[in-house]
Amino acid sequence: MTHWIGDVFTSDVGWDHLEDLVDIGNRMAGSDGERQAAELTRDVLAEAGAQDARLESFDIQGWTRGSSAIRANGDDVGGNCIALPRSPSDRVSAPLVDLGYGLPEDFEARDLEGRIVMVRSDIPDYYERYIHRREKYYHAVEQGAIGFVYRNHVEGCLPPTGSVGTEADPVGEIPAIGVSSEVGARLGRRFDGEEVELAVDAEINEAESQNVRAELGPDTDERVLVTSHVDAHDIAEGALDNGAGTAMVVELANALANREDDLETRVEFVAFGAEEVGLTGSAHYAAETDLDSIEAVVNNDGVVRGRTLSLVTHGFDGLEDAADSVADRYDHPIETVPKLGPHSDHWPFVRRGVPGYHVKSTSDEVGRGWGHTFADTLEKLEPRTLREQAILLTELVVDLASGDRTVEHRDPAAIAAELEAQDLAEGMRITGDWPYDD
Image (tube, rainbow, N blue to C red):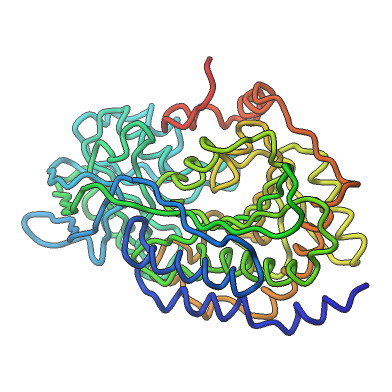
């Protein structure tokens, strides 16, 4: 039976929710806007037919943006710069060192003691792996830098944001600022080796976030999780990152409510809070739940940006088989990537051996594109793409929730070994994200 496909392709439930989310404004972790977004998501899930829609609150490290600046000889030279969330509130002066891409070997090759370091947000084509912002930040800290400037590689006068800090020490050690590609080029040209002042003002206190949870299907001990994160950085609407993911969760709940008889395993919908500040909501959930009862995690973070789905399968053969089965059934492309991806809300589960997808869209871009900038706005997305991807993901969730599909959990030691083999362990250690005993 395929009549449900027409219902999904003509549904406005997910897109309407996306519009409501972006119209809130600031959805920063711990803010009133994040709470409002969570409440809206809870209510829409209940209206779609999901059961026991609720919020579960937890404490987080709060951080509220103030002003930021880069100055030289008393003049503002940083343009429209923005602090990176969880940067300490501080003011430092030192020579600026432009490290270009900020590869690990670049940090080792220069004397950075007492300097302010500037790095790009991308990596060169020849480099074997992506280097996360926080890894570059903590390389700077480790080498004795006293300030950090993060230069966007995407042109358009767009300073990038993105948090620093670790789970153990949520507030970073040195002040950190994002600048646009154009401002970064000017800083490198005029002030490399010259004294500059970097200033960050921020309010740092305790705050509260929350996860949204709801359920569909039979009352089984086992569960398939369908997830996203509802928070976004305060500088933009957060349409791509990750309003679209939460809209997808709502759309899938609406579709699966009409296919509830096809579910042989309970499906739980979770919109996590505080993802952008260290995967805090998903880490809280994973620490409190019975991981053995989770059959699979379908984490939506990066969907709808492009028309073709890309599923990072983290080496779980059963997840790849399920995705290939759906692609073959509907004669529709779905890219699968078997590598590990230790970023976004699937990771607190995958690192413990729970099968998990990172569901996003294919892209030729390095990094987030418009994400984490002022340009993360609704008009970058299309309802058609949301609906098409929702059809495929609905079928994927039904497949995972069937008695015919079993995806084996993996030994966390095997996950750790693959992180080493894929050259990801070094970066995780320096950012305090390595979860295994060496």
